[in-house]
Structure formats: C-alpha cells, structure tokens
Length: 433
Image (tube, rainbow, N blue to C red; front, side, top):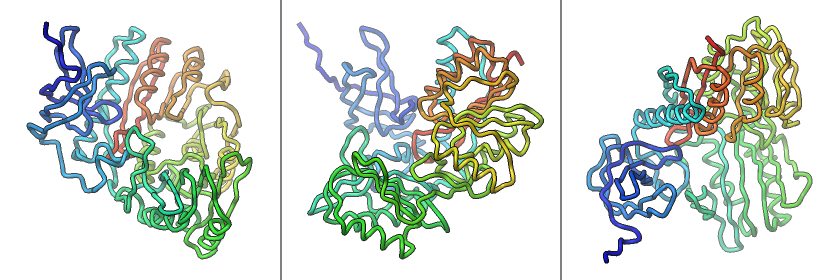
C-alpha cells in the first residue's frame, strides 16, 4: 500500500492573483481539481512547491522557481518577503493593475452567481496610480519596546512579529522620517502598540498611539518637546484601559479631500491615504452618481470626503456617519467651503432611507454594507454608486442588489495602494436601466 506524502512536492503553474495577493495554481487530484495558493508568485511563474492539501485553500511553500514570469520585476524594497505590507511589489505596475481588475470582476461574478443572476458585467475602467512611491500620507506602524531595544515597523504577513523597517519607500517622506523618530520616543519604554501616523497642520505629522504596557514620564516629556519643537503637529496617546487620550498640540489630520481642498479628519479616524488617487476617484464618483438636482443620500460619509463634492450639486443631501468626531469634522469641512448638507450621526448600515431618496452613494469599511444593501434592495432608489475597498464584500452586496433588480452599469478600479493587493473600486448600479 502506497502512503501519499502529507505535503507532496508538486510542479505548479501560477495563472492568476487571488484577493490577498497570493498566486493561484491548479492541481488535478483524485478528489477533483484543487486551487493552490502560492505566496509571492506571479502569473506565468512555474514553481516547485511543497503543498499542504489539508489546508483550505491548499497552500504551497515555494521551494524553487523553475521559470520566472515576464510580469516579474525586482522589488525596490529590501524588506519584501518579511514585511507584511507590499505583497505585490514583485509585479510590474501594469500587472498589478490587471490583477486588481481581475480580483474585482471575479468577486462580482461570484456575488451575482450566488443569487442566480446571469447578466454580463460591463468592461472595467482601470485608473493607474498617479504616483507609486512616496504616496502614502497615512500609515499604521507596529511597535515593540523593551528596556534594551525598540522595534518599529510593520507586522509580518499572518504573524504578530514586528518586522523592523528603517525606511518605507511608499510613505510620504515626512512620514518616513517618523520611523526613526518613534524609535527615539520609545527608547527604554516597555510594552507594545500601534502608532497611526498621518499629516496634520502645516504638513507636520500627527501621532495616534494605542499602547499596552508602561510609559514613563520621560516618554510624555519627549512627545511634548517634539510637538513644541514642530516635529509633530500633535499627538494623542491612548493607554490600555484609559477612557481618554493624553493630548498634545493639534492631533487633527489634514488631508486633501476629493475636491482638492484641505479636509480635516479627527485623529485616528479614516482618511484616504493617496491624495492624488482620491482626486481621480472623486471626479469619477461625481460622473457616476449624477447628483445634480437630485435628492441624494450618502452612507458611511466619514469626515465628508465625498460629501463636499456631492453638496455642490445635489438638490438635497443627507450624509450618514456613526463616528461622532467624524460627524463634527464633516460639519466643519462643509462650513469651510460655504456648503450645506444634513449630516446625521447614525449607523449607516441600519439607517432607514428617506422615501424620496433616488440616488445613494456609499463608501463602507472592509466589512461592506449588508444591512444597507438589504434596505436599498427594498427601496425606490434608482441609482447607487458603491465605493469599496474590499472586493469580496462588494461582490456579496452587489449580489443582494442584483436579486432586487439592480444591474451593474459601470465598474472602475483605482490604484489607491500601489504595490499591495488592496484595490479601491467604484461600481454603479441602476434599477432596470
């Protein structure tokens, strides 16, 4: 009797990139054709890998690259493979864009198939990244500190371990300098946490630190001196179990809104990380939503990134957001532009749509908008512009809407996060167009 190896060595031909960044190959097995995920691979690679078929999906540890894909490039970053960040840096920018397009189409097709919708999808308009280096104006760093050593960087893929990173080429240079600064701030402290670093007033960085462990008085003194000296515009320090943060200076984030003007965002709240790509997204969103003269509802409005665009054209606009500080910021951003809209503090996923709403814009977090999708399906809304940062939840929600008679009439993808498997997309749906 022949006993099959628990992890046989198999020759694999990678054909595509899955959501999450792994390459996908297929192997014929006695129990059927199996997909095998291969990390750090490219479509066209031929690899020899040790495959764990007990995993779902099956995964291969690449042992040897037999044939390199023509889509491969030499990564510019020395931490590729250990840092959990730029999982597609080994692909050319054109190949990354095609991988993102395919991820979105595949997710939408699965969502439609799940509800028995057999209509075809329109072609995808893919928007290239205006910049692929130094573009990020917001990042979250992991920190692990002991009396002897402080590690600042990003967590390794699928692990809690912090990979020390001296410099990150996708960060805005002003944020990149914060890597070295943070090591100094946390020198001889004890504990671990995360620091969200973004740009604040006058282009200086702001810090939002969540910390578990000890922080000495000298740490708070260092932060205060750094803010007073202009190295940071402000900071908020959240200690584990504390009900309030320790504030320094002005910790508000100031980014560029989708209208090209400064947009104030509360410390720790969501903001788009690629200002130039955000401009392209805003321009396309306006064309897709067609808000002029309409009663428009915006769900998951955040601090008003799209609100300030829609308010310029809509006959009336209701913007819904659950984060109280973001609601306050949205009001301030509208006032700064001389615009008006009704901003409602409420759970956008449970919000009852006004009876007269015919156009809805939504930009949910990665979990998508299952509740809002069910309400939209039962509503009299005619047009939906759905902005998504997660293809799988987008596909799920589009399936719900398709089952209620909505048809996908437009798909755009935006390279908001070059070198990563994350893709921003805009899907337009119309009811019985």
